[in-house]
Length: 375
Image 1 (cartoon, one colour):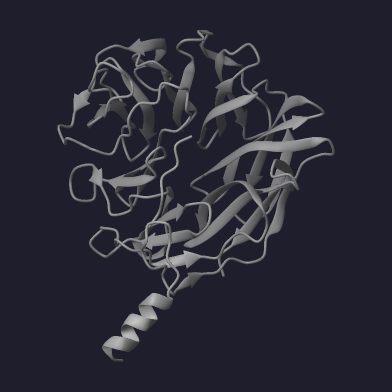
Image 2 (cartoon, one colour):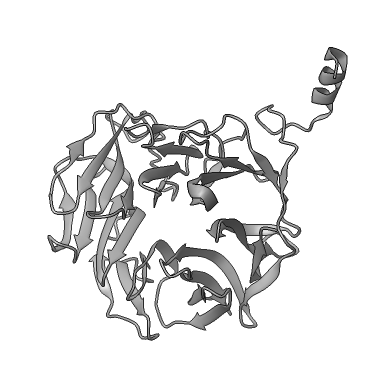
Protein backbone atom coordinates (compact mmCIF):
# COMPACT_ATOMS: atom_id res chain seq x y z
CA UNK A 1 0.00 0.00 0.00
CA UNK A 2 1.04 3.45 -0.76
CA UNK A 3 1.48 5.64 2.29
CA UNK A 4 2.14 9.32 2.13
CA UNK A 5 4.06 11.51 4.75
CA UNK A 6 2.52 14.23 6.89
CA UNK A 7 2.84 17.59 7.77
CA UNK A 8 10.57 37.65 23.31
CA UNK A 9 13.84 38.30 21.32
CA UNK A 10 15.10 36.87 18.08
CA UNK A 11 17.52 34.47 19.77
CA UNK A 12 14.79 33.27 22.15
CA UNK A 13 12.38 32.75 19.28
CA UNK A 14 14.92 30.72 17.31
CA UNK A 15 15.73 28.63 20.37
CA UNK A 16 12.05 27.99 21.02
CA UNK A 17 11.47 26.94 17.42
CA UNK A 18 14.43 24.58 17.52
CA UNK A 19 13.04 22.96 20.64
CA UNK A 20 9.72 22.08 19.00
CA UNK A 21 9.32 18.47 17.82
CA UNK A 22 8.93 18.10 14.09
CA UNK A 23 6.69 15.82 12.07
CA UNK A 24 7.78 13.72 9.10
CA UNK A 25 7.32 16.64 6.69
CA UNK A 26 9.69 18.81 8.70
CA UNK A 27 6.97 21.17 10.00
CA UNK A 28 6.82 22.02 13.68
CA UNK A 29 4.29 19.93 15.57
CA UNK A 30 1.65 22.21 17.11
CA UNK A 31 1.92 22.95 20.81
CA UNK A 32 -1.83 22.39 21.33
CA UNK A 33 -2.93 18.84 22.01
CA UNK A 34 -6.32 17.24 21.47
CA UNK A 35 -6.47 14.79 24.35
CA UNK A 36 -8.46 11.59 24.18
CA UNK A 37 -9.70 9.68 27.21
CA UNK A 38 -8.27 6.31 28.15
CA UNK A 39 -9.71 3.60 25.88
CA UNK A 40 -12.75 1.58 26.82
CA UNK A 41 -13.83 -1.69 25.24
CA UNK A 42 -16.47 -1.12 22.57
CA UNK A 43 -16.67 -4.76 21.52
CA UNK A 44 -14.84 -7.94 22.47
CA UNK A 45 -14.89 -10.82 20.02
CA UNK A 46 -15.67 -14.37 21.19
CA UNK A 47 -12.83 -16.67 22.15
CA UNK A 48 -10.91 -17.93 19.15
CA UNK A 49 -11.65 -14.84 17.00
CA UNK A 50 -9.37 -12.04 15.83
CA UNK A 51 -10.46 -8.78 14.18
CA UNK A 52 -8.95 -8.33 10.71
CA UNK A 53 -10.94 -5.31 9.55
CA UNK A 54 -13.69 -2.99 10.78
CA UNK A 55 -15.55 0.15 9.80
CA UNK A 56 -18.55 2.14 11.01
CA UNK A 57 -20.68 4.88 9.46
CA UNK A 58 -22.99 7.31 11.20
CA UNK A 59 -26.77 7.52 10.97
CA UNK A 60 -28.78 10.79 11.16
CA UNK A 61 -30.17 9.75 14.56
CA UNK A 62 -26.67 9.88 16.08
CA UNK A 63 -26.04 6.14 16.06
CA UNK A 64 -23.18 4.32 14.33
CA UNK A 65 -23.38 1.04 12.43
CA UNK A 66 -20.81 -1.19 10.81
CA UNK A 67 -18.96 -4.47 10.84
CA UNK A 68 -15.98 -6.36 12.17
CA UNK A 69 -14.56 -8.89 9.72
CA UNK A 70 -12.85 -11.55 11.79
CA UNK A 71 -11.20 -14.93 11.67
CA UNK A 72 -12.71 -17.41 14.12
CA UNK A 73 -11.02 -20.79 14.55
CA UNK A 74 -9.39 -20.39 11.15
CA UNK A 75 -12.61 -19.43 9.30
CA UNK A 76 -13.91 -15.98 8.23
CA UNK A 77 -16.77 -14.55 10.29
CA UNK A 78 -18.65 -11.26 9.89
CA UNK A 79 -19.96 -9.41 12.95
CA UNK A 80 -22.37 -6.48 13.00
CA UNK A 81 -21.49 -3.64 15.40
CA UNK A 82 -23.49 -0.60 16.46
CA UNK A 83 -23.31 2.33 18.87
CA UNK A 84 -26.60 3.91 19.91
CA UNK A 85 -26.98 7.68 20.46
CA UNK A 86 -26.39 7.16 24.18
CA UNK A 87 -22.99 5.60 23.54
CA UNK A 88 -23.75 1.91 24.17
CA UNK A 89 -22.10 -0.57 21.83
CA UNK A 90 -23.49 -3.90 20.64
CA UNK A 91 -21.81 -6.79 18.83
CA UNK A 92 -23.83 -9.41 16.97
CA UNK A 93 -22.72 -12.36 14.88
CA UNK A 94 -24.15 -12.71 11.37
CA UNK A 95 -24.51 -15.56 8.90
CA UNK A 96 -23.26 -13.37 6.04
CA UNK A 97 -20.64 -15.11 3.91
CA UNK A 98 -18.25 -12.21 3.25
CA UNK A 99 -14.53 -12.77 3.93
CA UNK A 100 -13.71 -9.42 2.29
CA UNK A 101 -15.81 -6.29 2.94
CA UNK A 102 -15.47 -3.43 0.46
CA UNK A 103 -18.39 -1.06 1.04
CA UNK A 104 -20.67 0.16 3.82
CA UNK A 105 -23.71 2.44 4.01
CA UNK A 106 -26.63 3.07 6.36
CA UNK A 107 -30.11 4.53 6.00
CA UNK A 108 -33.32 4.55 8.05
CA UNK A 109 -34.03 0.92 7.16
CA UNK A 110 -30.73 -0.80 7.90
CA UNK A 111 -27.03 -1.27 7.25
CA UNK A 112 -25.80 -2.19 3.76
CA UNK A 113 -22.64 -4.28 3.52
CA UNK A 114 -20.96 -4.96 0.17
CA UNK A 115 -18.12 -7.40 -0.30
CA UNK A 116 -16.87 -10.66 -1.77
CA UNK A 117 -18.31 -14.04 -0.88
CA UNK A 118 -16.14 -17.12 -0.53
CA UNK A 119 -16.76 -17.85 -4.23
CA UNK A 120 -15.44 -14.31 -5.06
CA UNK A 121 -18.82 -12.99 -6.23
CA UNK A 122 -19.48 -9.37 -5.26
CA UNK A 123 -22.70 -9.20 -3.21
CA UNK A 124 -24.78 -6.77 -1.16
CA UNK A 125 -26.61 -7.74 2.03
CA UNK A 126 -28.67 -5.44 4.25
CA UNK A 127 -29.03 -5.96 7.97
CA UNK A 128 -32.47 -4.57 8.68
CA UNK A 129 -33.34 -2.48 11.71
CA UNK A 130 -35.13 -5.44 13.31
CA UNK A 131 -32.02 -7.62 13.03
CA UNK A 132 -33.11 -9.70 10.04
CA UNK A 133 -31.06 -9.96 6.88
CA UNK A 134 -32.19 -9.13 3.35
CA UNK A 135 -31.73 -11.51 0.48
CA UNK A 136 -28.26 -11.66 -1.04
CA UNK A 137 -28.05 -9.31 -4.02
CA UNK A 138 -25.41 -10.66 -6.41
CA UNK A 139 -23.69 -7.72 -8.13
CA UNK A 140 -20.76 -9.23 -10.01
CA UNK A 141 -19.95 -12.87 -10.73
CA UNK A 142 -16.62 -12.11 -12.38
CA UNK A 143 -13.78 -14.10 -10.86
CA UNK A 144 -11.18 -12.84 -13.33
CA UNK A 145 -7.66 -13.08 -11.99
CA UNK A 146 -6.51 -10.31 -14.34
CA UNK A 147 -9.22 -7.77 -13.51
CA UNK A 148 -10.84 -8.56 -10.14
CA UNK A 149 -13.20 -6.21 -8.34
CA UNK A 150 -11.12 -3.72 -6.37
CA UNK A 151 -12.89 -0.59 -5.09
CA UNK A 152 -16.55 -0.25 -4.07
CA UNK A 153 -18.74 2.65 -3.01
CA UNK A 154 -22.36 2.35 -1.85
CA UNK A 155 -25.01 4.82 -0.74
CA UNK A 156 -28.59 4.21 0.40
CA UNK A 157 -31.75 6.15 1.15
CA UNK A 158 -35.21 4.99 2.29
CA UNK A 159 -34.52 1.37 1.51
CA UNK A 160 -33.00 1.96 -1.93
CA UNK A 161 -29.33 1.58 -2.77
CA UNK A 162 -26.75 2.53 -5.40
CA UNK A 163 -23.50 0.57 -5.67
CA UNK A 164 -20.57 1.38 -7.99
CA UNK A 165 -17.39 -0.69 -8.28
CA UNK A 166 -14.21 -0.83 -10.30
CA UNK A 167 -11.76 -3.47 -11.48
CA UNK A 168 -8.00 -3.48 -11.75
CA UNK A 169 -6.65 -2.87 -15.22
CA UNK A 170 -8.49 0.31 -16.21
CA UNK A 171 -11.87 -1.13 -17.22
CA UNK A 172 -15.17 0.82 -17.10
CA UNK A 173 -16.95 1.18 -13.78
CA UNK A 174 -19.91 -1.07 -13.03
CA UNK A 175 -23.06 -0.15 -11.12
CA UNK A 176 -26.24 -1.63 -9.71
CA UNK A 177 -29.07 0.38 -8.20
CA UNK A 178 -32.62 0.29 -6.98
CA UNK A 179 -32.60 4.10 -6.82
CA UNK A 180 -34.32 5.58 -9.85
CA UNK A 181 -33.47 4.80 -12.53
CA UNK A 182 -33.25 1.21 -11.28
CA UNK A 183 -30.50 -0.73 -13.02
CA UNK A 184 -29.43 -4.34 -12.89
CA UNK A 185 -25.66 -4.83 -12.66
CA UNK A 186 -24.26 -3.12 -15.72
CA UNK A 187 -21.12 -1.40 -16.97
CA UNK A 188 -20.95 2.40 -17.09
CA UNK A 189 -19.53 2.65 -20.58
CA UNK A 190 -20.12 6.37 -21.26
CA UNK A 191 -16.60 7.09 -20.04
CA UNK A 192 -14.30 4.05 -19.95
CA UNK A 193 -11.23 3.45 -17.84
CA UNK A 194 -12.41 4.84 -14.50
CA UNK A 195 -11.41 3.79 -11.00
CA UNK A 196 -11.83 4.64 -7.30
CA UNK A 197 -15.60 5.39 -7.28
CA UNK A 198 -16.96 7.54 -4.43
CA UNK A 199 -20.68 8.16 -4.00
CA UNK A 200 -21.78 11.30 -2.15
CA UNK A 201 -25.23 11.42 -0.59
CA UNK A 202 -26.04 15.11 -0.33
CA UNK A 203 -29.51 16.64 -0.39
CA UNK A 204 -31.48 15.65 -3.48
CA UNK A 205 -29.66 13.42 -5.94
CA UNK A 206 -26.67 11.36 -4.93
CA UNK A 207 -23.51 11.99 -6.95
CA UNK A 208 -20.69 9.80 -8.15
CA UNK A 209 -17.07 10.92 -8.27
CA UNK A 210 -14.39 8.77 -9.82
CA UNK A 211 -10.86 9.05 -11.13
CA UNK A 212 -10.44 8.83 -14.88
CA UNK A 213 -7.35 7.42 -16.52
CA UNK A 214 -5.80 9.97 -18.86
CA UNK A 215 -3.11 7.75 -20.37
CA UNK A 216 -2.98 4.35 -21.94
CA UNK A 217 -1.98 2.48 -18.82
CA UNK A 218 -3.45 2.44 -15.29
CA UNK A 219 -0.21 3.76 -13.80
CA UNK A 220 -0.23 7.09 -15.64
CA UNK A 221 -1.22 10.30 -13.87
CA UNK A 222 -4.93 11.06 -13.63
CA UNK A 223 -6.09 14.65 -13.77
CA UNK A 224 -9.88 14.73 -13.76
CA UNK A 225 -12.90 13.77 -11.75
CA UNK A 226 -16.16 12.89 -13.42
CA UNK A 227 -19.56 13.18 -11.76
CA UNK A 228 -22.84 11.41 -12.34
CA UNK A 229 -26.12 12.69 -10.95
CA UNK A 230 -28.92 10.39 -9.90
CA UNK A 231 -31.61 10.43 -12.55
CA UNK A 232 -29.21 10.95 -15.44
CA UNK A 233 -27.30 8.03 -16.85
CA UNK A 234 -24.17 9.66 -18.19
CA UNK A 235 -21.01 11.32 -17.02
CA UNK A 236 -20.73 15.07 -16.80
CA UNK A 237 -17.15 16.31 -17.05
CA UNK A 238 -16.74 19.03 -14.43
CA UNK A 239 -13.73 20.43 -16.38
CA UNK A 240 -11.94 21.45 -13.21
CA UNK A 241 -8.63 19.86 -14.19
CA UNK A 242 -8.72 18.28 -10.77
CA UNK A 243 -5.33 17.01 -9.61
CA UNK A 244 -6.39 15.01 -6.59
CA UNK A 245 -6.50 11.50 -8.05
CA UNK A 246 -3.43 9.37 -7.55
CA UNK A 247 -1.89 7.33 -10.32
CA UNK A 248 -3.83 4.14 -10.99
CA UNK A 249 -2.64 1.11 -9.06
CA UNK A 250 -2.79 -2.00 -11.25
CA UNK A 251 -1.65 -4.26 -8.41
CA UNK A 252 -5.04 -4.57 -6.73
CA UNK A 253 -4.64 -1.94 -4.04
CA UNK A 254 -7.82 -1.22 -2.07
CA UNK A 255 -6.86 2.43 -1.67
CA UNK A 256 -9.33 4.84 -3.25
CA UNK A 257 -11.58 7.82 -2.56
CA UNK A 258 -13.77 8.33 0.50
CA UNK A 259 -16.51 10.93 0.13
CA UNK A 260 -18.46 13.00 2.67
CA UNK A 261 -21.11 15.67 2.31
CA UNK A 262 -20.60 18.05 5.21
CA UNK A 263 -22.33 21.35 5.91
CA UNK A 264 -23.28 21.90 2.27
CA UNK A 265 -20.02 20.83 0.65
CA UNK A 266 -18.34 17.71 -0.71
CA UNK A 267 -15.07 16.47 0.78
CA UNK A 268 -13.00 13.70 -0.77
CA UNK A 269 -10.22 11.89 1.03
CA UNK A 270 -7.81 10.37 -1.47
CA UNK A 271 -6.52 7.44 0.54
CA UNK A 272 -3.66 6.71 -1.85
CA UNK A 273 -2.30 10.25 -1.66
CA UNK A 274 -3.56 10.98 1.84
CA UNK A 275 -5.01 14.29 0.61
CA UNK A 276 -8.29 16.11 1.24
CA UNK A 277 -10.13 17.84 -1.60
CA UNK A 278 -13.26 19.99 -1.33
CA UNK A 279 -15.62 22.16 -3.39
CA UNK A 280 -15.75 24.99 -0.85
CA UNK A 281 -14.23 27.38 -3.40
CA UNK A 282 -16.84 26.47 -6.01
CA UNK A 283 -15.09 23.62 -7.76
CA UNK A 284 -13.49 20.47 -6.48
CA UNK A 285 -9.85 21.21 -5.71
CA UNK A 286 -7.05 20.10 -3.38
CA UNK A 287 -6.87 21.71 0.05
CA UNK A 288 -3.84 22.53 2.17
CA UNK A 289 -4.24 19.16 3.90
CA UNK A 290 -2.12 17.10 1.55
CA UNK A 291 -0.35 14.46 3.62
CA UNK A 292 -1.59 11.39 5.48
CA UNK A 293 -5.23 12.49 5.69
CA UNK A 294 -7.44 9.75 7.03
CA UNK A 295 -10.77 11.49 7.69
CA UNK A 296 -12.80 14.66 7.18
CA UNK A 297 -15.35 15.15 9.93
CA UNK A 298 -18.02 17.72 10.75
CA UNK A 299 -17.44 19.24 14.18
CA UNK A 300 -19.08 21.95 16.27
CA UNK A 301 -19.59 25.44 14.91
CA UNK A 302 -20.01 24.26 11.33
CA UNK A 303 -16.27 23.62 10.97
CA UNK A 304 -14.77 20.50 9.41
CA UNK A 305 -11.74 18.84 10.96
CA UNK A 306 -9.35 16.84 8.79
CA UNK A 307 -7.41 14.20 10.68
CA UNK A 308 -3.97 13.08 9.55
CA UNK A 309 -1.93 10.17 10.85
CA UNK A 310 1.50 9.09 9.66
CA UNK A 311 1.59 6.15 12.05
CA UNK A 312 3.53 8.14 14.65
CA UNK A 313 1.68 11.39 15.29
CA UNK A 314 -2.03 11.95 14.53
CA UNK A 315 -2.87 15.63 13.98
CA UNK A 316 -5.99 17.73 13.45
CA UNK A 317 -6.52 20.51 10.89
CA UNK A 318 -9.56 22.59 11.86
CA UNK A 319 -11.18 24.44 8.97
CA UNK A 320 -10.84 28.23 8.81
CA UNK A 321 -13.89 30.47 8.84
CA UNK A 322 -13.69 30.88 5.03
CA UNK A 323 -13.81 27.11 4.51
CA UNK A 324 -10.12 26.68 3.73
CA UNK A 325 -7.79 24.51 5.78
CA UNK A 326 -4.62 25.77 7.48
CA UNK A 327 -1.29 24.71 6.05
CA UNK A 328 -0.07 23.58 9.48
CA UNK A 329 -1.86 21.40 12.04
CA UNK A 330 -4.20 23.05 14.53
CA UNK A 331 -3.32 20.49 17.18
CA UNK A 332 -1.68 17.17 17.78
CA UNK A 333 -3.93 14.29 18.82
CA UNK A 334 -2.75 12.27 21.77
CA UNK A 335 -1.25 9.00 20.50
CA UNK A 336 -2.98 5.69 21.03
CA UNK A 337 -1.94 4.18 24.38
CA UNK A 338 -1.82 0.63 22.99
CA UNK A 339 -0.37 -0.96 19.84
CA UNK A 340 -2.81 -0.45 16.97
CA UNK A 341 -3.73 -2.93 14.26
CA UNK A 342 -6.34 -0.66 12.59
CA UNK A 343 -8.01 2.62 13.54
CA UNK A 344 -10.81 4.94 12.41
CA UNK A 345 -11.82 8.45 13.48
CA UNK A 346 -15.46 9.47 13.81
CA UNK A 347 -17.13 12.29 15.69
CA UNK A 348 -19.98 12.76 18.12
CA UNK A 349 -21.45 16.06 19.35
CA UNK A 350 -18.50 17.96 17.90
CA UNK A 351 -15.83 15.79 19.52
CA UNK A 352 -13.50 13.25 17.99
CA UNK A 353 -13.80 9.55 18.68
CA UNK A 354 -10.97 7.18 17.85
CA UNK A 355 -11.87 3.53 17.31
CA UNK A 356 -9.08 1.01 17.13
CA UNK A 357 -8.44 -2.69 17.01
CA UNK A 358 -5.68 -3.39 19.48
CA UNK A 359 -2.76 -5.32 18.03
CA UNK A 360 -1.62 -8.53 19.66
CA UNK A 361 1.86 -9.08 21.08
CA UNK A 362 3.20 -9.90 17.61
CA UNK A 363 1.63 -6.88 15.91
CA UNK A 364 -1.15 -8.90 14.31
CA UNK A 365 -4.93 -8.41 14.66
CA UNK A 366 -6.24 -8.44 18.20
CA UNK A 367 -9.54 -9.44 19.74
CA UNK A 368 -11.01 -6.11 20.91
CA UNK A 369 -12.42 -2.93 19.41
CA UNK A 370 -11.52 -0.01 21.67
CA UNK A 371 -13.06 3.48 21.83
CA UNK A 372 -11.40 6.74 22.88
CA UNK A 373 -13.47 9.90 23.37
CA UNK A 374 -12.11 13.43 23.20
CA UNK A 375 -11.88 15.20 26.54
